[in-house]
Image (cartoon, rainbow, N blue to C red; front, side, top):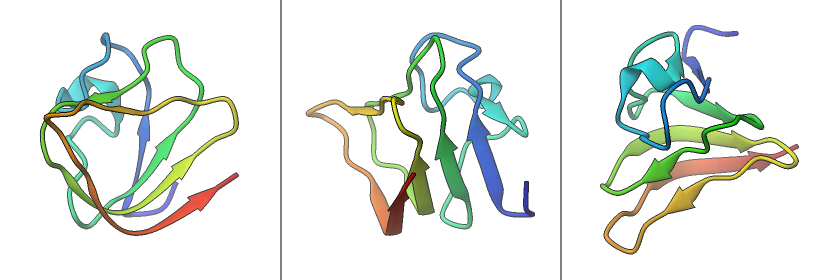
Length: 78
């Protein structure tokens, strides 16, 4: 894992903005490359986070509620 990488560990149910859902334990920001692997608790966005990049692994799920959005400068899929 690189300096700006953060991985969703899904340790708490569905809440993107909970730092316990991330390794390392902080909420992603505009400097982070976010990886969403397959987890038992899929992240759900209900506000407007900004991140640098996102990798959604095969079989993983990310949900953005109608009241939320996400600003990503680029994206990748594995």
